[in-house]
Length: 89
Image (cartoon, rainbow, N blue to C red; front, side, top):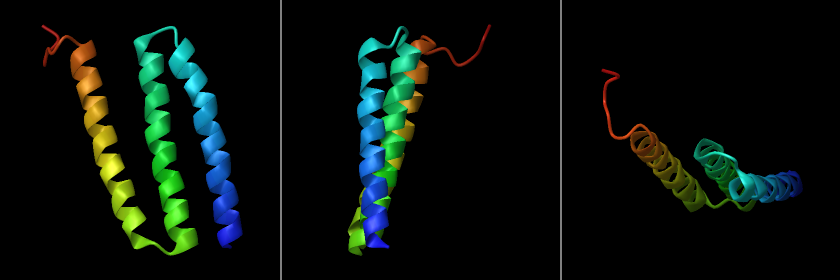
């Protein structure tokens, strides 16, 4: 089972490498932000797989911290791209 977890982690790292192309070539800032969110989500998945494969509960805490940072980054991007307005009027 740990071998499968490590193979899945490697596959997810390849997905991150493919997402890097979108960050560099993204036609709009929204595309770049979605690719960065892919990095965050995939990074958390890799950390959780490694925590399970190596039986390291501390990696779960690191994954949780990354999730919180990804949410804050998304909120900051949306606030910045909307011009800091809270309503449509």
